[in-house]
Image (tube, rainbow, N blue to C red):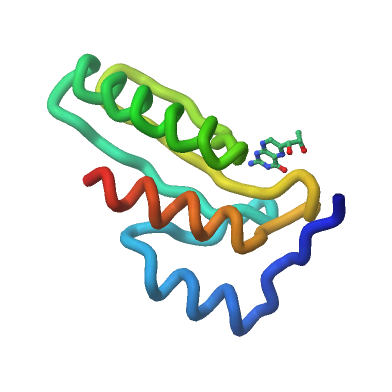
Length: 96
Ligand code: HBI
């Protein structure tokens, strides 16, 4: 099912509503890095995000190194950034 990509204006507005997310330089995605006290805190965060992702059927592309979690969001079905990515980023921000 094709999903619409966000327009330039929609992107600007959406990024203004998010906390600390930025457009990826190498592809049509948004990304943010989170730093925690230690690995256990980081992994607990990842567990909560995983549950959000499963519920939304919209999954992050992410990496974890000790207390840092890097998350990228893009929509494969849109071949780029869609509202689903913004909604997921907002849900992740709400965990902070
Ligand atoms: N997660 N980020 C992201 N983007 C998608 O397009 C996507 C997903 N999770 C599941 C999903 N699509 C399914 O609907 C299938 O398209 C794989």
